[in-house]
Image (cartoon, rainbow, N blue to C red; front, side, top):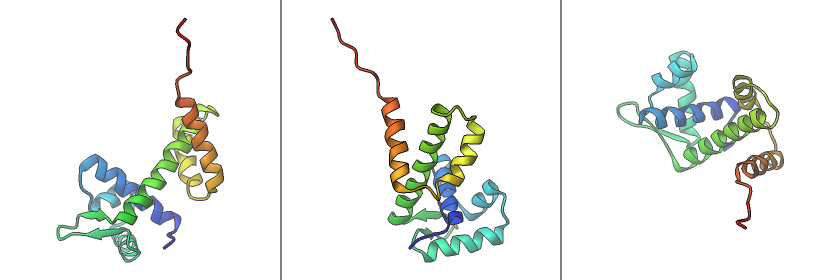
Length: 131
């Protein structure tokens, strides 16, 4: 199921909070994003209905396999686009992060793959001969 940009942002936030804290609850997402609890509750219901998350008895949010995959994809796009903007174009880290957050949702797979290849090739150490 295709989710909207906001749904992708929620998945990315859940992933980052889970990696940071070991668990995530709706209130944690609300606090991180600065949204109201009712807004987050509605969003979590949509993500749950779409099969991306489950919510445990203590309100802990867990990814389904599909949800983790989607969250990782969104986060990878965000990281690599940010890195590309900073390293290749000289954009400030703050601006690059904000722009990447918008770009990650609309960029074509072809363009993203090119950025990814470019960033990864920049990371490779140049080979030197040992003579």
